[in-house]
Every structure is written in structure tokens, then in C-alpha cells.
Length: 282
Image 1 (cartoon, rainbow, N blue to C red):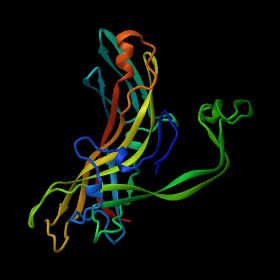
Image 2 (image 1 turned 30 degrees about the vertical axis):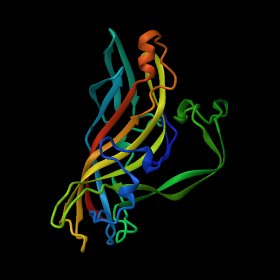
Image 3 (image 1 turned 90 degrees about the vertical axis):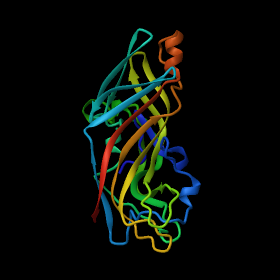
Image 4 (image 1 turned 45 degrees about the horizontal axis):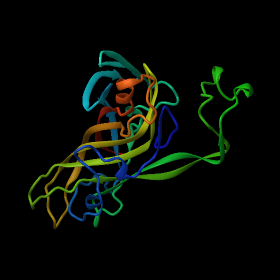
């Protein structure tokens, strides 16, 4: 599972507060709540089988106007739009080793755990393995055959100059805490923070870089009903989106100049793919 990776979408592990889903939110009140929530983990070796739509949706907010662009295929592609009479394009190539697209952020099988289900059922843990460099990192040397050519390794991406090990880590997720009474079936959704870092797109006027976050969010389908005495709600499906959100605008303006350059410097780009997760057994 790729939770941390250097790429054209450069990412590092992020906490919940950095990856709040628009209009839904993950907050301390939910995370530490003791009110009932659907069981998404269970004690019988539960995992979730994840499938994706074959499209990547793109929205760009430029100059205060949100523009929904034509969807890309699951492998990416080129999108373009008109702004102030100029055609502006950017490319997203999911086949490149350095690029992570939304449908690559979760594997086909995901394990969720609620380690304190009795007292804090809104807390969800997503265990995963990540590779860590025990040593220094450096740029590879093309002359030594460490990058370029047939290696398919970018000479601009650092490599580990030491031992690479795999270790277990955990992402922290949360289930919302709606107001409800006994017998109700309130709407529950889950927000899973994945990564934060720098996102880059190659476009008409060069490279646009900005702060980004990535997260998964989805509505929970469950059986049972709200009961403060016995929490008997069991999740069966999660339907939602994997989102990569360029939240900081461009840190360096594209080489457009004038009003267009200023607008591109503040552009906000969001890409996402829909997913469905169904409950299963390991």
C-alpha cells in the first residue's frame, strides 16, 4: 500500500486535520466520541474489497470559478480549458513511476480496525506496510547506470544509499458523529487521510507546484439501528471517492505573465476517482 511516496504528486503521511473532506470533516469531536457508530472492523478478520471507476475526474478553480473538466481515463491523460481567451492544458500520466493517481492510493483489499470499539467506535485504524530508507538518500548517477535509459528510474528522484526495510504503520481515520435517537438509522460516513505534500502538473506554461492532500471518504451502508445501550450496527458497504486536492495553489507561477499568470498561481486543482468497498473476510 503506497501511503508515502515521492512523485510528480509528491506525498508524505498526513494526519486527519490535514485531509478534511469538503463538507464532511474529520474532527476531534468525532474521533473521541463514545456514541454508537457502525462496526467497520469486527473481530473476525474483516477486510474490505475495493473496486474503482475507470475514470479520473478533474476540477480546477481558477480566478474564483470552478471548472469541471472532461474526465480522464484511469491512466490519466491531457485536459484543457479556456481562460481569458487562452487554451491552458496540463498532463497527468499515471503510468510514470513518479506519479500516483487516485485509483493507486488504496489496494484492492484494505483492512480496517476499530481498536477501541467499545469506548471510541468512531476511531478507525488503517494498518499498512511502508518502505523506509535506513541511511542517506541521494540523486542517482546516470553515468553509473543508476537511472535513465532502460532502468526506467528517474534521475530526478532520490534513491536510498543504504538498507531499505519494510515496517508497519497506521493511518488514522474517523467516522462522523450525527445526532440521533434510539431506533434511528442516521447517515454515517468515513474519512481516511492518506497523504500530504507537493503536487505538480506539467502544463502549457510549465510546471505548477502546490501543497496537496489526499484522502478517501465514503458513505457507510450498514445493518441495525442506533442504540446507546447496544451498538449493533454493522457496516456492509462503503461508497465514495479517493481525492487528491491541490489546496495551496501554485507556489511558483506558470510562465504566463500578467493576469493569466496571477490566476494560475492561485489555481486549485482537484482530481478524484469513485470507489466501492464491500465487506469480506481475510
